[in-house]
Structures are given as structure tokens and as C-alpha cells.
Amino acid sequence: MTMNEVYAATEPARAEIDLLDGSAVLEFGSPTCGFCRAVQPLLAAAFADHPRVRHIKIVDGSGRPLGRSFKVKLWPTLVFLRNGREVARLVRPGDVNEIRSALAQIDMAE
Image (cartoon, rainbow, N blue to C red; front, side, top):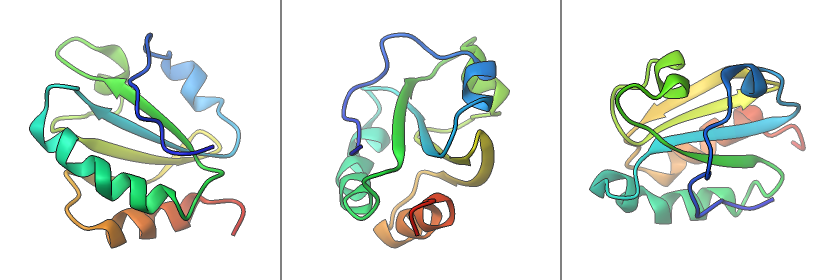
């Protein structure tokens, strides 16, 4: 798998996320968010080194249940999961190396 450039058409349920097998990153944000757009090149560079990690982009906003269940307050928020459990979290990352470091914590191929 590679970095996903498209936000999910439907938001997955929290129970579905909790049952994920393997490594995944949830990216909470919005296509109109400037911070979210600015982080995309950093994500692309970091995901290039971790092709097996699943990337799920989720449009977040007031009243969206998945974002609230993860207590998302700012965009983008990246939640790094291993077998459905949160291992790391980055809010508005500004450095590709912090994204790579979090990916390395969950990449089961390493």
C-alpha cells in the first residue's frame, strides 16, 4: 500500500478501526484545511519508506464520531495504529523525520 491521497467516502466505525490487523495511520483533517494540504509532501516522503502501512484519510469536523472517539482537536492529526491500538500520535507535524519515526514504531515489516 502507499499513501492515500483521497479522503474516505464514508467514515469507518470505531469498532472497525479497533479490529484492524497490522499497521495503519489515521489522518484526520479536511480537504480545505491549509495545514492538512501543507503536510501532504511530508507524508508522501515518509510513506515512501513504509509501503505496507495502511493510510486512511478521514474528513473530520464537529459531531464526527470517529474523530471525537480519538479526541481530535486540531488538523491534521495522525494516529498511528498497530493491530487497532494507538501507538503514537502527531498533531500538525512539521518535520518528515517525526512522521518517519512514528511510522517505524508501527511498521510490522521492520
